[in-house]
Length: 178
Ligand SMILES: C[S@@+](CC[C@H](N)C(=O)[O-])C[C@H]1O[C@@H](n2cnc3c(N)ncnc32)[C@H](O)[C@@H]1O
Ligand SMILES: [Zn+2]
Image 1 (cartoon, rainbow, N blue to C red):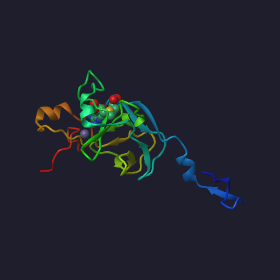
Image 2 (image 1 turned 90 degrees about the horizontal axis):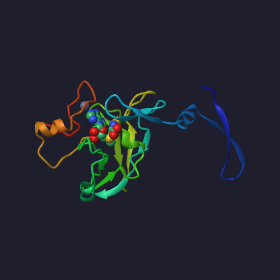
Image 3 (image 1 turned 135 degrees about the vertical axis):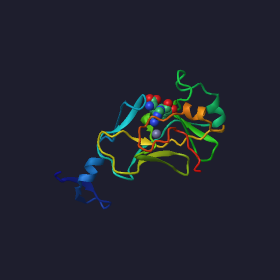
């Protein structure tokens, strides 16, 4: 890719020429698109190559208590186990992406994900690539859903995973290691 030059002001006010690398040109491009997924409903796809460690998007929505989240109507009344909730590590609060959510709410789960979530100290959650992701690949992170109830086969079935990974654990729930 040809290198372009851009003019930028230095702190002293002098004009200087800064080489714009191929990398900065790439990262300025749109990272993802939302479209129908073969796994479930809508999904999010890389619109350009994404580097390992690159932050892709913040998981946005209304920050509420678990109590308030439980009180709210299901995000999809036809599928009571459908969720737009993201639980924070304090065990008390969740981000409800059904209210004020962005495209991150369409990212599906996989048992062999190419992304992970990172929670900042101020309770914000970001989705980041854990490996190089090619253009057109669907983005996934492992939901690792945690329930208060005992995980019976019936409950596992309710949260059945259809990611299709070779080592799919069959459920979007986090299973305890034996
Ligand atoms: C945050 S939404 C993701 C967007 C979803 N595809 C949609 O169109 O609403 C989470 C829901 O998507 C579905 N889902 C995501 N990943 C899945 C998977 N690997 N297998 C089965 N269902 C999945 C489940 O219903 C889950 O509660
Ligand atoms: Zn799976």
